[in-house]
Every structure is written in C-alpha cells, then in structure tokens.
Length: 517
Ligand SMILES: NC(=O)C1=CN([C@@H]2O[C@H](COP(=O)(O)OP(=O)(O)OC[C@H]3O[C@@H](n4cnc5c(N)ncnc54)[C@H](OP(=O)(O)O)[C@@H]3O)[C@@H](O)[C@H]2O)C=CC1
Ligand SMILES: O=C(O)CCC(=O)C(=O)O
Image (cartoon, rainbow, N blue to C red; front, side, top):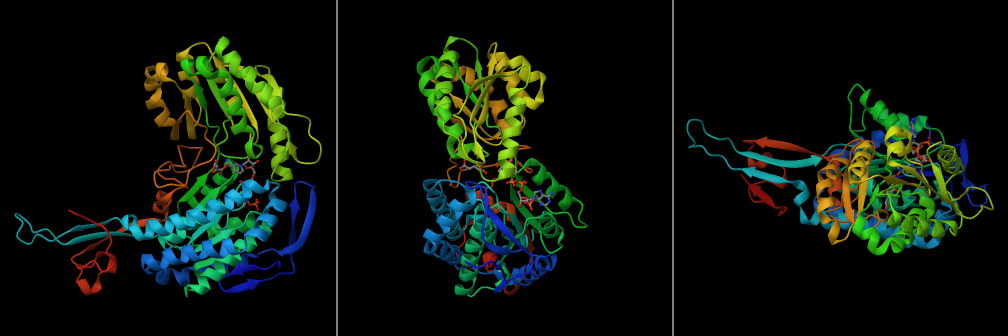
C-alpha cells in the first residue's frame, strides 16, 4: 500500500501527510498518507461533472456490471484489506470479515436492482388526441441521476458505510459520479477500497471522473467538497454535530442541495408485561449481547429500555446487570470517540436522578470502553431531555415507568429514531397496538422480539427515521430504496421518438417495467 489517493485515473501524492492511529496500541502507524488539498477536491469535482452525462446514460446492465466488478476487486484484496481495517479500527476480525461480505453483497444487490428496472419509475401516459374538451399530450416520465454526489465515510463501519459502502453503491447505481471524503480514522482501508473502485472504473471503460477519493485530518476538506457547485447531493453517517454542520453548509450554498445525514439514535426497546413475565431473564442477557457488540459503536445500539416497574422488570435488570458485569472492555474506534464515550458515561453516573446498575470489567490498555448500565424513573426521564441523548458506545439506561400511560409519555419524549423494538407476547398485543401510531411517528423501523443491531440489507429495509436519526426522514441509507435519494423525475411531453431517451422510447429497447396511465 502506498500513501497516494485516487482522483479519477491518477494516484495523487502530496508533501503534506498524516498517519493513521491503531487505537488498540494507541500508536501512530505507517505508511504516511497524502493529505488532499482543496485543489484536489476541485479537480475531483471537475472530473465528476465531466463524467456525469456519459455515466448517467449508461444502460442499467453496464452499471450493474460495474458494481459487480467493484465487488470482485474488493474480494481480490480481502486479506490485506481486512488486516488493515483491524489495525485502523480496533474492530475484531469476524466483525470485519462479515462487514466485507456485507459490502460486496450490497454492491451485488444494487446490480440486481438495476436489472429489475423498477428504480427508473417509468410512467407512460399515451397521447389522447381525440379527448374532449382538450386533447391529452403524450407524457413520459422516468427518473435520472441528480449529479455528482459527495459521500462521507463513517468511522464505525470502515467498509460497509465507507468508501464503497451503501451511500456510494446507491449513488453509483443511480448513475451519479461519486467523490468520497474518507474518514481520517481509516485512511489505509479507504485508499485500498478507493483503488479497487478506480480499477473497476478502468476495467469497465467508464469515464475516469466516475469516482475519486479525498482524505485528510481537517474538516475544511469535507466543507470544501459540500460547497463545490458541481456536487448535487451529500450522503453522511456520523455525529449529530457533523451532520448538522454539513446540512447548514449545503443550505447556505447559492444552489442549496440535499444532505442525507444519518446521525443520532438511541433505539428504545419496550418491554411489555407478558413478555417480561415469561422470559425476563433471557431478555436481560440478550439485551446485553446487543448492547455490547462492537463496543456498542452502532447507530442501532439499544440505548434506552422502557418498561413498567415491578418484580418482573427486576428479574430482567438483575440478569442484564450480571451479564454486563462480566463484559470485557473493548477497543473503541478512535481516541476521540473513546473520550466522548467516557465523558457521556461520567455525566450519566453523576446525574442525581440516575442510578448506576452495573459496569463492565475494569479496562486495561488505551481506548477501551467499559460497558455501563444505568436506570432512572419515567418521571425523571421526562423532566430532563438530556437523559434521552445518545452516548455512543456500550452504555444504556433503563427507564422504570409507573404504568403503561407513563411508558407512552416517555416514548413521546424521545426524539426521532432509526428503530424502536418491542418485546411482546400474545398477551401484550392490545397494549402494543395502542402504541403503534406513536411508534410510526417516532421511528423508521419497528421490530418485534429481536434486537436493533445488525441491519438486513434488503429491498424492504428502512434505515432512516425522523430527526435527529436523519436529516431527511423520507428515505433510507440501507437497502435498494437508498437509490431514490439520488434520482429525480423528468417528464417528456410530446417529444418525437428520435429525441426520447431509451428508457421511455415507444418500443422500450431497455425492457424497463412501465406503468401505463
Ligand atoms: N450515530 C452514528 O451512527 C454514529 C455516531 N457517531 C458519533 O460521532 C462522534 C465522532 O465520530 P466521527 O465518526 O468522527 O463522526 P464525525 O461526525 O465527527 O465525523 C464524520 C465525518 O464528517 C466530517 N465532519 C465532521 N464535522 C464536520 C464539519 N463541521 N465540516 C466538515 N466535515 C465534518 C469528519 O471529518 P473530520 O474527521 O475531518 O472532522 C468525518 O469525515 C462519535 O463519538 C459519536 O458520538 C459516530 C459514528 C456513527
Ligand atoms: O446495525 C447495523 O448493522 C448498522 C448500524 C449503522 O448503520 C451504524 O452504526 O451506522
């Protein structure tokens, strides 16, 4: 691996460099990576703009093959890629092996989706020249790519939400050239994947500007990318502060653009009485499994448990406390993320209305997050909105409510969420049904008798939700529906067939599914 980054077909170097940090050893690691300049950002955007009209009009089969070629190229570097990602993220091998599979799997899923063709949403309203009192014109609608897209790699998924992650896969599938701002926590992983995409662009004979990667440790770089007039949409996963900063930058441009930011979620879990009575102990253990997985560094992490107080809840809490008390500390992604976790845990531990129920075992070594379990009352939770804020890591708070009416009150207090989980048995169905309208208002995904971590990449998935889970609740960043963020409709009225794009020509040469009006 060298320290250059791909801009179009070139490998770009610089005298200004930065090093990755191995969070496990708390040490800087070689090699040095070139820091991209604002001129590199401008060059990447210029190439992306130049590539746009050709790339967006490639037929779906060409883009499907391109996505599959990216997946093949990533698979070809599996061993060194996973090894480098382990070093840069502190995440364990099985997790990163799985994440590599998820990354190539979602690229191939988008290839399949492109071949199915529904994404183009072709609608044909044939002309009705004889219609009275006025004839109807011939109207043909399809969706086209919005333009070059900026994607911000996420720190917590160095593969599946990073350079070739869901945002990039969906934007490329839509026909949008992509400029990625790599996360500075994993520059080596980013460069390896970036070069795999660069190779796939060349192998598929596509214009070089279809993909570029910029990276560096200062956020001015990302800001320059969002401000570049050639960028037409942004995909982001990270902090609420970071996401909102990008939303503000995009809105302040002379031409404002959409930012699809996935930010902050505490993913409430509701324990209903019959389920608690039947399997409180098993639920307590399983909850800690979901909470501590990956050191809790998932935006789907179950950060709040809500239940009616009583002896059945005590059984759950005791089982959870016992399991969490044995949880070994795990390396967190970056020293900064570890420090902010520690600060968040200390704030909860010092809160007058919060009891510390259990802590994981003592941490030895740097950047190790010690799991933390807290509890509070429904009343205290409703009185202090700070108790519902995300602490990114393996920390969670159990909210003990007086009755189901207070459960509802607590639920109304929480902000928009990616997920809400119900633990229910048949005896709970009528209580749960009464809450469904609240759940729908609050979350993008409602699940029963499972745990929110481990998002399925599938056509029906919604990985989104009302603010602050995302900046735009109308879409998803996981699953094939993510392509819709990067498409817009165009209507062709009475255009002669010779001028119509293939997608809406009279003889349908691409064989795309059509809705006839
Ligand atoms: N809910 C979730 O899914 C996640 C939440 N987080 C939260 O984010 C915290 C920090 O983690 P991190 O992953 O670094 O997330 P950040 O939001 O800080 O950073 C993500 C990316 O956005 C860029 N960025 C951030 N702020 C700006 C800005 N003002 N202008 C331009 N670019 C910006 C960063 O660049 P640069 O590094 O150069 O600043 C980085 O490339 C965690 O402690 C956690 O609380 C993190 C990951 C996932
Ligand atoms: O739980 C998952 O699989 C996905 C979580 C996620 O999207 C995130 O942490 O950013």
